Every structure is written in structure tokens, then in C-alpha cells.
Length: 172
DNA sequence: CCAGGGATCCCCT
DNA sequence: GGGGATCCCTGGC
Image 1 (cartoon, rainbow, N blue to C red):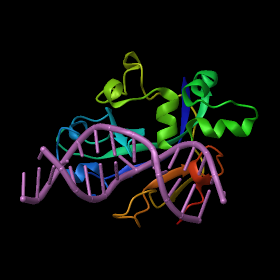
Image 2: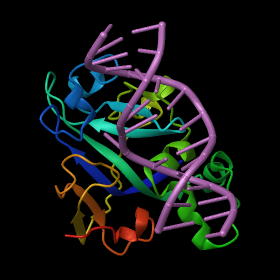
Image 3: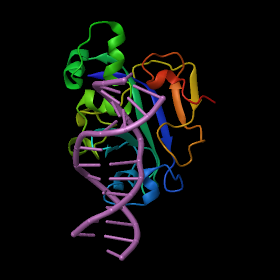
Image 4: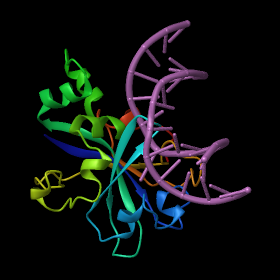
């Protein structure tokens, strides 16, 4: 399976009250304090996994949360994993639009993927480059948080239908 | 040991 | 548009 990254949020580490790293280096958050390029997967609301990539040097927290992908390869497999029947093109947004959805589509779990090296294709889960050049990146506030809720740290491709909430939530 | 909260999703109205 | 599901992690006692 493969998807293009169309929506992310930045979490700035220990000083960011909305970041998990604000709790310090604990059993749960230790990947965030490790070297860059590793998967931080957490379980939320008793139902969903979400995927981050660590972004700062060893010892310093800071990460990017993946909030939406545009499905590229393995759409039937994603649909099975999500228990979605794709009747029309518009059904595709149910596969990977949202952090919990994209994790389910890819079968990402904390047990399997937390701490894996996202820079290595051999990891099974990895971030690659296909020559696509993102144009029209827009910013907004981060979604679903109560602390530091005004910071514009959400980045998404304007007009891309796979952006969660249509990209319209609390713009600017 | 236990209570509370959480970077969500889905279904119902 | 609103509420319930559902469980892991953390911190306080």
C-alpha cells in the first residue's frame, strides 16, 4: 500500500503543551526523544492508532502527526482493512482521511510499528519520495486539541479532497 | 491501586 | 451536529 501525504500537524516537543512529549520522556513517549525518522504510534480514545514521525536529534522531542493520505496503491487492501465498500470515487476518502483512518487502512498498531525506522524500506512501513512537488500548502490550527489550540501548525494541500474536514476547519 | 483524560470515528438525528 | 464507544497511559495517593 502507498499513499501521498496531504495533511500533517507539527508537535513541538516538551514545551508544546499539546504534545505528548509535554509529559516528558516516559515509557509511552520515549520514541519522541530518540533519533529522527522513527515511528511514534499511540492509541487514542480506546479505538484508534495514530502515527507520528520523530523529527529532532536524539534527546530532543518534536514530531509530525500524519492526518491524511491520498490513496495511491493497494486500495482494495485498504478498503478491506477499513471495512469500507468503495462504490464511487467519493468513497475513497473514507480510507485514509483522518489519522485513525489512515492507521487502520495500513494496519498500523503500536505493538507492530512503534519505534520502527521510517527511513528504511526494509522496515515495511516507511516514508519515500516519488518526485511529487507539493504546491498550495495551507496552514490552520491543529485539530482536536485544547491546549495551544491557536497555533497554526497544521499543514495541508489546499483543494485536495483527501484532507480531513475538507481543510476548512478554522483556517488562518 | 485507581481515577481521569485523550492529537478519533461512526452512527443517529 | 452531538454523543457514545472503549482502553491505554500517567500521575497522585
